[in-house]
Amino acid sequence: MAHIKNVLVLAVMCILAVALTQASHDGQHIHGKWPMVGQPRQDSESTWVTCDFTVSPRMRCHDCNTRLICKRVGGLLLDCPSSFAPYCNNGFCSPVPSVECA
Image 1 (cartoon, rainbow, N blue to C red):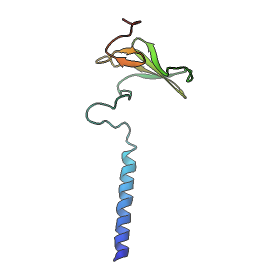
Image 2: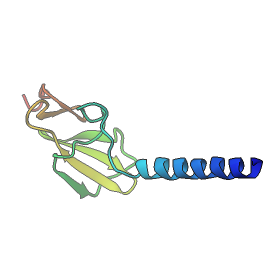
Image 3: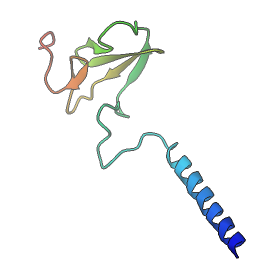
Image 4: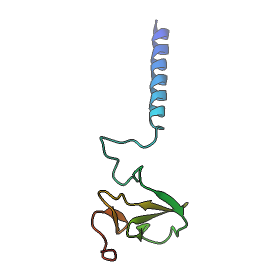
């Protein structure tokens, strides 16, 4: 009887482990109706370019509506969403334009 109980516990733990592993590979998880802060939005355009990873700050404005995030593999250009934060200000999308773009 104890052998059957051990087999059942092991089977349940295996099923739980598989379910948790599959849940972590589904892609971007959204809590509530807004994406997590600091994550690029799915509907924004992005382009990879070359950039110097050692230059600080690693997050900066490429132009008035595009930010540049330098990573070890290259630079990621992200368009700021036009609806609620269309301007790049100090490397972040903002509803307020920077001094250079005002």
